[in-house]
Image 1 (cartoon, chains in turn purple, cyan):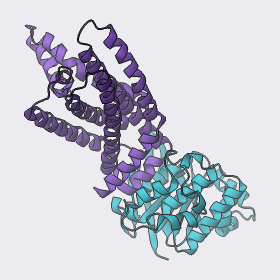
Image 2 (cartoon, each protein chain N blue to C red):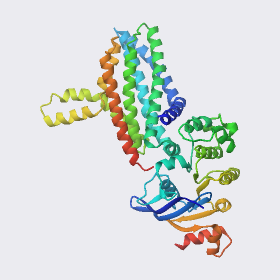
Image 3 (cartoon, rainbow over the protein chains, first blue to last red):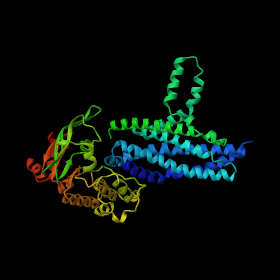
Image 4 (spheres, each protein chain N blue to C red):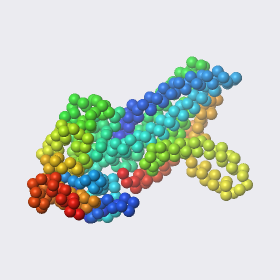
Amino acid sequence: MRKILSLSVLGLKQVRRQKLFVAMVFFFILYLGFCLFLGKLSVAHADKVLRDTGLMGIEISLVILSIFGLSLDFARERSTHTLDIYLLHLGRSAYLAAKMLSYILASCLYLVISGLALSIFLLLYRSFTPAIFGALYSLLLKITLVIAFTSLFAVIFSSPLLAMSAALFIYIGAELLPAAWEIMSRTPNVYERGVIYTIYAIFPNFSRLDFRYLAVWGNFPSWTQIVQVTIYTLAYLVCVYLLNTIVFGKKEL
Amino acid sequence: MEELISVRNVSKSFSSRFVLKGINLEVRKGEIFGLLGLNGAGKTTLIKIILKFLRPDKGMVMWKNSLLTDVVIRDKIGYLPENFFPPSQLKAIELLEGLASTCTSTLPPPQLLKMVGLEKEAGRYLGFYSRGMMQRFGVALCLLKDPEVVIMDEPTLGLDIRGQRQMFDLMTSLKDKGKTIIFSSHILSQVQTIADVISIVNRGRISFGGRIEELLNLHSTKVFEEAFLKEIEKQ
């Protein structure tokens, strides 16, 4: 565990100093201006529009940071042979855990910075509700799964472009599948329904993880909900990590 | 001298193209072992097999007459990869200290940086290091866990004359400290200067293994380059 933590801290320092991280912070500050514009455009419920678009901005920038950052980072470490050095010190499964943990820690840091910026912004426009912290927590859980999938695809594919595309596909798929299942659950064809349900069950269930809509209306998730989504995320994370260690263990470098 | 690493009958192919065929070699304690060959001869592949980054199709790698394990690789072997570029967002001392906490026994990072002549650059970002400084830093990383064996893949690649000299001096000082060094190179003058024993890898096979004088005697010449070329063309 000490080894994993040491490498995670190194990884966190790297991510924090990357241009992408700084770019995402600036992107979010600019995005807040856009939120203000949307709030002004809305005929009513400007406070809810501000909360919703603000949280959406954090999610978009975090997805970009984790998918692009991790895929490119892994490819860079492979091409510069830093990966060889790390593997000689830690072994493959510990390296994967450390890499994922470093991006989860970086996401936490980004959530603190952007959450603080959003809170100040909402306070200024009298739209603040502490419920956004619940939404930020659920966002961290979602991003944890996105990071796990990105690291899996970064290991599977030699090309970072393919890894990014696959991770983005999983993210978009997981976001859209509940709607697809809603439509297909009404089809009389059992086979089609079965296929869609299987995909829906296998993909991470982002719709249930997301507390953004509760926060928009100023509502907190219940403790039961929080515990359930945390357990679900951890169980899913362990499954993807185990799959990743198997794939990485077989991979020739 | 005690046999540390021995490669026994190792073969490796990539998509049905043989890269290594029945490779056998022994590396003894305290020697500088030069792995020679033209570009694409299979030197890096062999090193990667020793370090278990690649799996051989046939054969095995032994450590002191028992199978080389992951634990031995992690504790006893240091490695400087070819074209190594450390992460540019980290400072030299940060990376060394971070990795030091992953090792069971380590040399103190400041001492290591002093050993490779980078003590004044400890707080500098690695992205600002020159190629030569990066290579020397790579050697410091190699020595972090105080390994018995140091494997260097083309350690002088991309270095100017001064950088090459510094690297040789480092390798010689490591030998004086009792380390065993395996290095690959295709620059013969370098190998002749420091290697105790050489193996020539040619088209995936070991065509010669022994001392440089033996190679020179074998081809009745005093010029190493000539002997090497004759050996390569023999097959």
